[in-house]
Length: 370
Length: 258
Image (cartoon, rainbow over all chains, first blue to last red; front, side, top):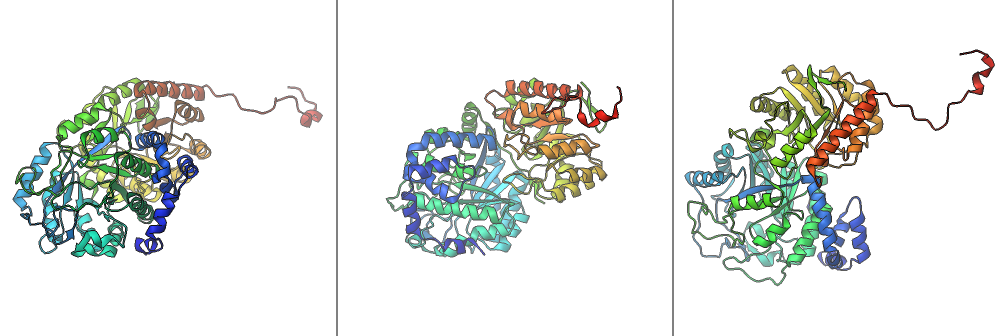
């Protein structure tokens, strides 16, 4: 049994229509419910819920504070490689982009992590493209061995791996794995993912099950907002979370809400999501899952990030570079996407404090994983 | 007011505080001072043992304040024992709040792993205060393996729902030979006062203070409530009754005089 079997019972167009059909009464029922279901989530992301946005924001704010307190967790991404054999029409690392490819060596990794440590980071997210011949389990294990002594918490955002590989990585100190489906629209998926292993929709969809079975402490999901209809995609993502939480009940979950950013060679999709809609989506996730980590990257603008800290977000990156070697080794190499909020980690921490929140640098310990 | 004794250590205050969720370390410190607490619990995972001057710990260097490291984040007895040893080394105390909640959603304590870990940690010389469900039998089993106190939950952590487990807390308090510290779910000073009136030896509060509009004033409110509840308990509350106790026709025939 995996999520794929549940997913196959749904039809994209039917789901889309049922979200659009939600009424103000449905929204009110969802807002007042003690425990919320995927149907409630649909109502909360529906067009009908837009006029309840201020109320949703207040609820989201208070639920988040109750659960997470007045704190915001900080992390930094570390891009290890931009080598990639996939063609994804929205990504700067796409195989067909004629850019200089780079994979960090051991000594380069040490230089980069030293720079991140100087800024105070204790939680780090390792990111790569998909180039299994060079950037594979052996590479990841070596990288983790180098990085582990220096950080309290290591997350991984790389190509989908096998169950045994996740198990091994967890044993070696990986705390969390993030894997985004990008879009749950199976019919359209290959429009964006035309070549490479990533073109296999079903294998990607099964990945969180493999991570869960491997006993990973946290799994991160997400869709690339703007590829397809954000409402329908987010509903399926919520459904996926709901299933995983019941199945791998010892695991924590996070969701990221990346909007398509300008990148090298990007194709326009015509499915953008507005600021108000993104706030609606953040609040809907919070109302659906009180314990969900909601992560916000530097793709968003300063103003937007300043304001969503109080609305349900729990985790943010700061001072990010999305190119391998971007912090110190090779700042000029090509980035995966353009970041928008360029404030330093120190400035971000000061902003968080000024809003009455504690910036949390450390919320795990490497010794908790033996 | 009687002093509280846990493992031969005496406490004037019967209010314990958690240190998470505060908007800043300064507010946390002021709330601790206002509460007059002598015991705060600190999550090991939040403490940076690598740096000499941890930001959190530097705000907890207060006279009369004892630190109670907790194992939040562990999922098994084995992990808990490991974390406990780390805590003992880093914070130089053999006191430990044992928290094993493999369920990250409601943070429900695992009774089986908790019992196993308590037994092992007691043998290793720890003063163990386990966070548990309000399960009277588990409390007795923990006593048997040498727990220093029990910390049954009133409601899920952070829920502020109050004494949802009231009936079981009463049984635990009635039967316990070790101090009973009601932990988790206490949402308001009246909840704390009620727990103390029932005879709980202490209460632990975090969310209700840290997330209050004014955490420092709320800490003071909890201090007053805990003192009021304890005083009421020690003064022996008058019994609750629906009807007046009048001379009863049942024993009239005995025809005796008082």
